[in-house]
Image (tube, rainbow, N blue to C red; front, side, top):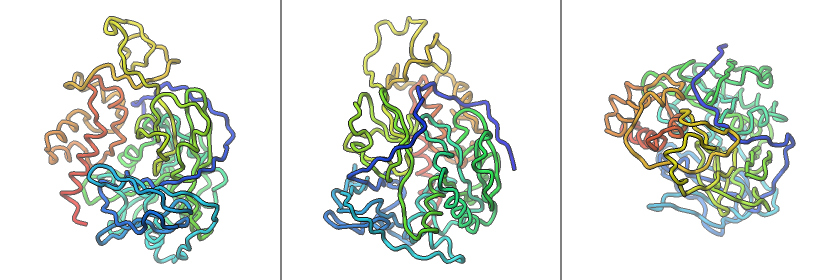
Length: 436
């Protein structure tokens, strides 16, 4: 057992004081969000518009040898298949009906846990390092990390996702422990006792500011990735619960607890995966930019959108597109500043204002103040931009994920979108180096 403690990082001062009770939202629509997988997966649709599907039915299959599948989060009729640029699959929209029918899933064979995850589509809850790709059934992990801690803004705690699902969580751990050749690690908050009773897992605790919850930090400190063949899988609490529930009930129950944070309303809700934004927002007044996911790593959406594949947050950020007069002369501002460039009022909300346009890097040391990973932030970004991936590998690109650069991007005075740069760099490296 290890204890992880960091000082580098940043907790953004956002207003967050939701009631403790959890309400249930029923959605008339559900969507299978495929955008997290589109860059690396070539999908083959198993359904067409107008087809009727049931919960757990395979609706997407990967082309090629892996044949990974993605299943329907709801029963109903296929209403729409949304595509983006170059006809890249984005999501499949389902008009829900009152049917409680579930697609039968195969019984668990203790000797073939990977096949169980593969055939049920639950393998999609696992992510592979390096490159932060969907877990591949042909690349067996040497270790698996269970993230049982949350630190991103507005995220419901892992303890909240676990409550009432303790038996399912242990069943999920039992299956994962039989997958790994090395160790199954579980990282929870130091102040939490909710995860201590579980077995077949090595317990670790962690404390510190965001991004203390990021798996990249846990992996680097406990089981570092040194070369491209060091395969590690990661999964969150919701994923483990989903696996355990499928084992115990022989049915898929795609649901999770999310937090809703609007200027005038905050709360916790139980929803099905891919619930529509209209049902989540209900009669709430929407102002600002609507985001599925936390403010640092989420994606912009609209009232016609749906909850992202692994998102547990729906929030809105005030939209501000005009600069204040003579803003560069002000020594006092209500806006938040991580560099303490002026006096700050932490009670004022963070907005979408960028305070400038993209320009050259100014202070390379600024980003390391919020980067707890042992990597040089600016040299790594520059090596990716220049296409020098040999240097990038030496500097630690195999150890990172795009989300690790959300805080450096947030505080960046040069407005460099480092998250997108790292994402494109990892995709290019994976395409060149993985032969699966």
